[in-house]
Length: 133
Image (tube, rainbow, N blue to C red):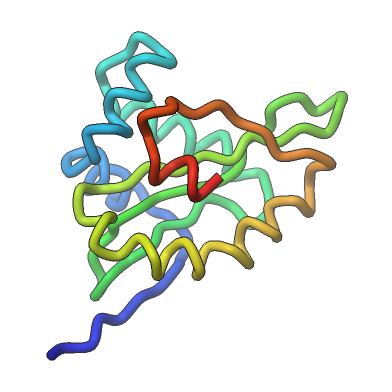
């Protein structure tokens, strides 16, 4: 039995491309339902760019060096101090979900550094995203 190495590190443009190419179907459907846009690579890159100015910045979760999820927090409403956390993953995320749900907890707490409230919407069918939020 091999041991999997997990890391949460700053996201790169290469990570965006890998996740977009291997995006979980529930995330793909949710992005389309929310935006009407099918270019998931563009949507993920936009989320990464919007999150770049927030603490801790966009992050990617890797398993044995391969990106399996990407997440961050974008400004939702600066006047009211609301941040919008987001996360999408590859179809490999389910096999590693438990580890990343635990590993993300300190990073999600850090997201609250810049915002009074963290809030987002999620498709009720996207069970993994609901657990993460």
